[in-house]
Length: 284
Ligand code: SIN
Image (cartoon, rainbow, N blue to C red; front, side):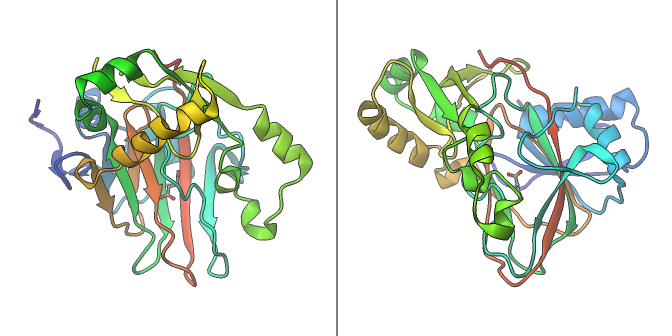
């Protein structure tokens, strides 16, 4: 369903997912009417982008808090003075980027993140785009037979899979300490492979290449072919958008029904983002 808006403008950047929102200054307190429209656009488009916003970390936190309780990201230090915000930085000399694999945030937790908010403080002139993929569309496009099979499965999600993409400090030294590895290895959770969005009531595919290692009650060899199919299916180009950042753009997206992927094509240039993770609930 396409909604109309009285207080903001919402321009989709792709048919499946992603919209730019204009006509709002996020540094100011928002009325319930304005925030209500932003929230509706968030449910409709999964990922929203607000360009030319001038935000302090406190103002970013104030906007994030309108969506619900703020969560903590377990593997990165917060920015100075603000425990709710982490800095995601790739320096010009570094070659790995944070989260550089298709994923949805923190599915290795019992209560994975509801959404995430990223504010661009410094971006390369070209490169460093982020892609998103619509997991309602991915689910809807499956055959009835596959939907039926998946409806009975729970995916096991582990922080230890692709762990180097999850941490900021690996970018400096490349080596995890045993303590880090242990901390990550214990973070595992199983969730329905098909979840129902608590606000829209729609079903979506809830797996990601970064974290899903298999299905409950199946061996790895049995799980692998189904996962391989789903990882490719989930990022069919028609389900995706690609966003080109500019400094001072804020993005907010719904982790319950979307995957994202930051491209790592800007070696030699610095990129700095401030991220807030929004608290989620137990997927059903
Ligand atoms: C993330 O996975 O939160 C990082 C996204 C990005 O850097 O574009």
